[in-house]
Image 1 (cartoon, protein in one colour):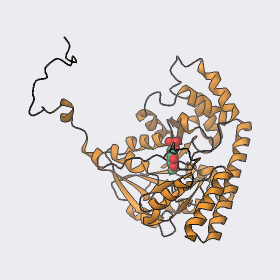
Image 2 (cartoon, protein in one colour):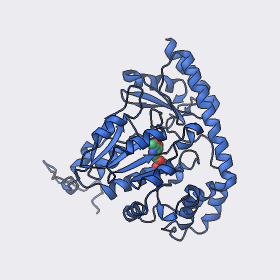
Image 3 (cartoon, protein in one colour):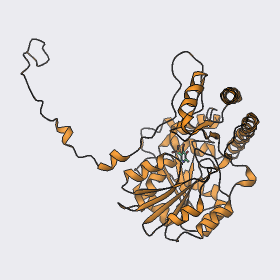
Image 4 (cartoon, protein in one colour):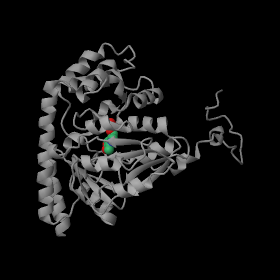
Length: 378
Ligand SMILES: Cc1ncc(COP(=O)(O)O)c(C=O)c1O
């Protein structure tokens, strides 16, 4: 007779003993962490919805990526090249730096976590703007650091004066997110240079450029020159946005060789997998770059159309340079999110701050403009 036999008498236990798992001591920091809320997938209720909640590319990966993935499958019994030599070589050439300055990981969010792990001891401070990318507080908190969040300006851009003033002798890392996710404004090269002049040279300044290619070309800061002039600068880049391989998880840092080595010391071993490396390499060929430039230009043009349409409806918006626009709806953000969802558009609400909408196919933009017009007219 087994204990699952329904005829087995179950001994009465007036008070169930505490399960051993309840006695496991999880770090107290976990209780204070905000949850990362991913863009919601569309509900499965028969309504056709556009998912514009995660700043992804709405286009499938390039044919060259598909081909590279198929070509790499047969080698999957082997571990990936842990050094990512071919990809680092290609990225070094792309950025005009030695490959020793490139550090890879499973997305730039992971590289940002590696930076925190390499730099921050318990109680050390990490300064960043808020609201910004919601992974920052989680990455800092899980690694024992203290977040110093500096409120955005009235125009929802980084307040660089306040950020410089927030740097103390406990600060190990400052993160500049440009364009800022979710609000959209981008920093100019002059603003970044001026800021760097006010931050001690032993404080690392990471420039998170996840959306760099969406910035109007004439407004893109020359971060390669900034990096060359400032050894404390780290550029964070991803293949998840323009290149459209978010599902493969690959991103990288460009940094001083000492910092790049530190990142490779703390990163998860073999994190950047064989398929991710092969796909990333396929995105860097001249033909792929040409196609990606075309795609990015189309997103910028669509963003201009959407912003103009919204402004004509009477919306006052921040100057978005990303593949998204932001409606500063304050306490009505949740209501707008539900309003849009009911009309077939899955957008991303941020508490009582605002709503972010990714620029995707023109049909999604048309629906967004119709919904925004209905909302503002109501
Ligand atoms: C500002 C910013 N940095 C980094 C990332 C993460 O990119 P990855 O997919 O490479 O981790 C995102 C993704 O949304 C982002 O918005």
